[in-house]
Each structure stands twice: as C-alpha cells, then as structure tokens.
Length: 74
Image (cartoon, rainbow, N blue to C red; front, side):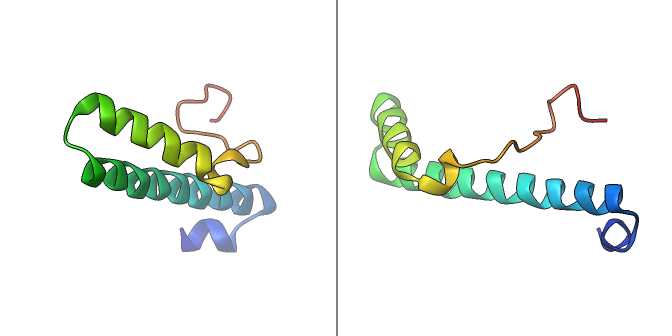
C-alpha cells in the first residue's frame, strides 16, 4: 500500500479505492456481528441486518465505490 500511496495519481486513486473497500467490508462485518448477537434464528438475524443497514447512514453514501467484482476495474 505504501508503494501505491507514493506512486502516480492513478496509483493513489487505486490505494484510496482499496482503503474504501476495506472500510466497507469492515463496516459490514460489524453490522453482521451485531445482527448475529441480537438473534439466533436466521430470519430474525436477516431482518435485524436489514434494519441495521437501513439505519447506517455511512453505508448509504458510497460515492461510487468500485467493488472487487466490478468488471470495469482492472
């Protein structure tokens, strides 16, 4: 990552994209763990996760984050 941060403008954009992807996944993991801790039944966990996601303002404002499965990212 340090190499990307010290590189060209394109490399810096890639480093920032990777950082945002990592933060997105970490946030999802936290929300999933919260839902898991609240309920033991799968349907209730799923409902709790949906509620948590709808209440998480930062998860709604993703500003065009390129996810790893996006075929336009090379």
